[in-house]
Image 1 (cartoon, rainbow, N blue to C red):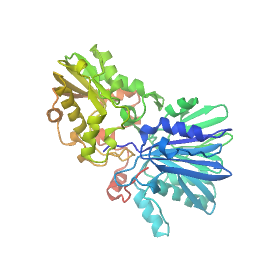
Image 2: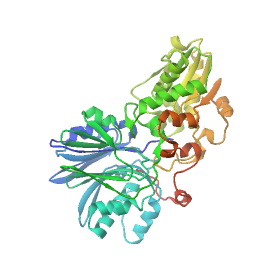
Image 3: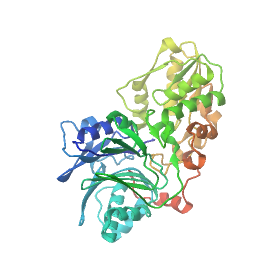
Image 4: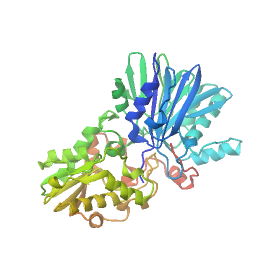
Length: 460
């Protein structure tokens, strides 16, 4: 199943920050629905975290303090447990700090084995704890916290957006490739860092800029910037296609505009005669609007979503996912009966959910269903923090477009081309990670091989 790994949040202010962390995490709940946590500093560093949604974990909880960090999380299968919830609190001879992480360190197993052989003790299966131990270790070696982080960045292979709470300072770190998003906001003398700009909007903060790849931001009474080792930029294309909220701005690009552009481009690449355009809500809505605008086929709500159920792919077993589709979506018969429709969605993974949706539409009177997908076919695993672990998960890995169309029960199927995707995002191809589409990973071959020997199941 596909999962985005997490969201991180950090804030400094001249007022208590708990409410801001709460609403910042709440606005990024789509990035993680299994656990949530906060760490706040006021005389001492305190952490509260638990399993469940933000509203559940922080019910009847309030921590005072003017500087803090927060986290919401997905785990990989079988690792949904409290000890892996974040932020993690680390105690060592030079003090203590809390850390939260979005991404995936795919040489974490190798690093962990090395530290364990020298007496290191771990209490979680998370690669975040590996990062934390390395930071503490390097701080002890060199005597400077920021220099220690720089040294750690040279050892980590993978993706990471980090927020660290040390004393009354926030430290934000983005990996040298800038794979996962991280933005900086400001209001008065207060600063916020977050995985998405939508968290800034809800709190009334101005988006200043993205945290730069390889940048280390130290935030207390002022803002200071440092840099670790540099590398080529590889922003994750799937943030634009699916994971980020459409009202967010990532790497200077509006997610909403990208998705609308994807729909427009798809209307040219996948022309078809139809009566209406229908979206798979909510992931396909913006692209469907773009498709309608580009094709002059009217857009209508053909499927009604139950707003009180989460994304179907987060349900752990296949029978639960099938039930989730029935509960989540219901066709509006008056809109679709007797009509040929274009059904727009963002991506196809296994195809089981989409197959069931097409069956629902046809059993409710749809005459024809032409499927249009705004993301090119996903064929390869992600090593950078999206839980797409093996090629076996992807229907497009061993089937042609015609074979997929037949399996889905659709009249036709067209994906946006890779060229169309790049054009819609508007960033140079060399600055994007397209590995799950092309198999061309933005890493050295020796690094890729480490994934096969990874001992940690839980990322982020």
